[in-house]
Length: 349
Image: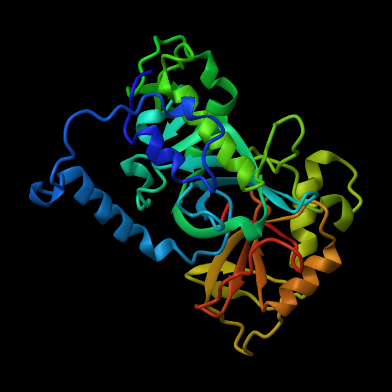
């Protein structure tokens, strides 16, 4: 098999237990004496990885939200997950496995680039052919954040990456056209037994089984799409006459919950709000805005109670994604992650 870096033996060492078959490590043949690393300078590309890790360190405690890459809490050395969408039915996130091993990219692998910075080097390759579902408790530190365009590229590669007709070339990273731009990815897999990327993926599947992380399939797992959607809870807030008027009526119903005088938010004017109702008598308020998606099954009463408890106001929305913009006057405010006790589906979609 074609040997790539890191070796399959190093990948196997990340698993909780040894791989099921030693044949997976057939590409690891040590020749010659072990070098004395004390006399070898650190290569520039390794120094760059240290810089990337330092730059991404401030993201570690970021509240969980769509588009973020989080370590797997129970086995941080094994890999991470790029979060795509929250599934309120299962109470889990859907996403894709992420590893540091760019050389093992195949036609469904999305390479993390400079435009994705800051990103920890442990998050270098998104394996779009390995979608998974994870609970909030499975997620550790945040390693990076993808834009909506990059999330769309990952979704596209999951569905269409196998259509790539290029020649198999293990270890080669190529540029491919995706809707709205381009992505860096690998070439299609070669024959089993001659392409170590097959063994690499088998090791990853074994690791996921050991961690009891379930695979996800588009047909079986309903997710919150990133394309324009119907505003969350629209049918619960108002009985609409036509689908065209839905988003407008939902926005109006939100704004009249607790009407107040006009206010100024970071030099942008809005009217009304629903939340704490603790504004000053002057009617002038400043604060920090946070964009969120609510769960599709969340009721109007649940959302209103949560907004009041968290001292938040809705200042705009729904936008084309069905997202709302919230205002908090506490500039240190951190929203609780989606899960039991709040109606959130995605923070900063």
